[in-house]
Image 1 (tube, rainbow, N blue to C red):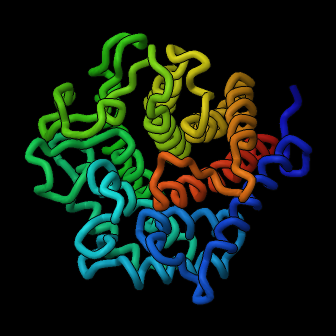
Image 2 (cartoon, rainbow, N blue to C red):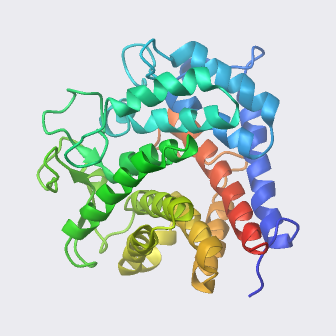
Length: 342
């Protein structure tokens, strides 16, 4: 199969779907350029400035970034909806730190050092020196000092965006150690470690499906593996340290035990992103094939209104999800087309 480029029909479908997602956002904004009612929430906004900037929609990106800063940035560099992370409690339970990373990356593209510097300091306060990882929640929120692989990878990406490669490498090595702690690929993969670096296999007070990935069951949080693989691949690209590419491959290979479950629904979005990044770095056609399959699934399940909403999710999560998939579809195109120039 030939490689899709930005002007090819296959990739055009991805970009057209992304454009429909942006149109959905534009039609949802109120006359002041903000999300209305319950959607005016950090959980709804935090991915959109980076998504819009990646698509070249700089005025929109700057305007929404200003809304995020004015509405949610605290004096100590945290992003919060009042005292809580979001009115959807899921954000505070599993992604309190992670939601800070997307605005930090957007700040680099938008030239907002004034926002990024205190926000990076806030991330660093959540660094766990013993493991090299980053706390899932605020300092002191959990006595076990839990850290999960998507938060660690997200913090690593934020650090890479601001050229803090040595700090990012510490996060990368933490992910490699977590991988080494796991059992065989057909057994559950535990997503959390504690403050001493031990796997968290007990009840964490969150849905079990958010604490581990069971390859034998459908509907798992494959996005966690995808995010880890993307970050490690990016870390290899800037550090040229082979262990990080090996780690990216190993995290990605975990998908193989899940079979076709991986491509059922929205959970394949970061699997496709990881595959696209690995294809750019390696040129291996198997990664490109995964991108094509993931993208086809995402385009097929887009709603008629241009969003990727699901009735079982909160309005905040649906807005978040739509921004994320728009971003990933653009990344698929950029990564695959970049391969043609190297």
